[in-house]
Length: 325
Image (cartoon, rainbow, N blue to C red; front, side, top):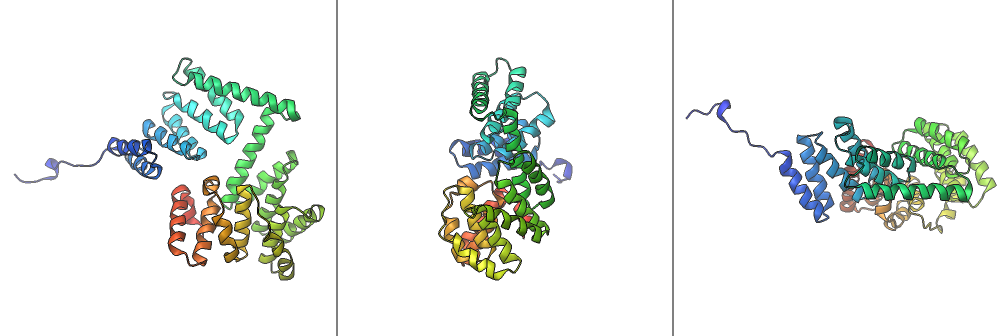
């Protein structure tokens, strides 16, 4: 028989084939392998609601709530209200992020579309908890529930822009935080940092020096000024302030990371290495900067295999890392 294009049987793995392997890997908590299989199934069917939802559950399991929510929102965008369980999953993720207003909104949406659904009890329990949190916050310090949610949303937005080096956008959000929520001290230091990186170096230094004079114990000010002085060639000021960081050991993981990154930025790679090694990577996995700078520090200390491993982990979690230099 003559072989022609019309009678050749085209063989390819369908999405369900890859998806079934992903489910098996997920059930045995091999999350990296499961993610790979789910992504392959989505390459074949990018809007399949089952594939998207299951990958979102995986991201929730490993604490990547924003990525999970992006996938769930994609289900809603493409399929409307046909998959109301997505509302429950979104409510749960937003609650984990501390975005209580959003959590309540999606919890209410689930009950609106699935009054007697499989997750009814869980949603009711979640909404009760959110109501209690709202009452507690109001009783303790008269901070309105919606205000707390607004603050957290501003923090998340500023964090995203800072991590992606979008300085103008970060400055705009941080200016709003400084105006409306002056009690959040870190916002002004992040503002000075964004100013410096956007080119307003002298203004950033002037602001940070004034704040440091007001509070000489501020770790925020020390970290910023060490980096500012180094980058702007103020060597004597840099040499005077750098040693004050070396006996500081924060207990909060993001502060540990900021200290480690500052040491890396000023090319103290030998000092930065043990600082990175002491960080609980699970608690900073949402920081693109963790993977970028840890990989660089490892390479500078001639630990090339480990550097490559950290870089690959970072690119998998944060694809935009590949565009950073």
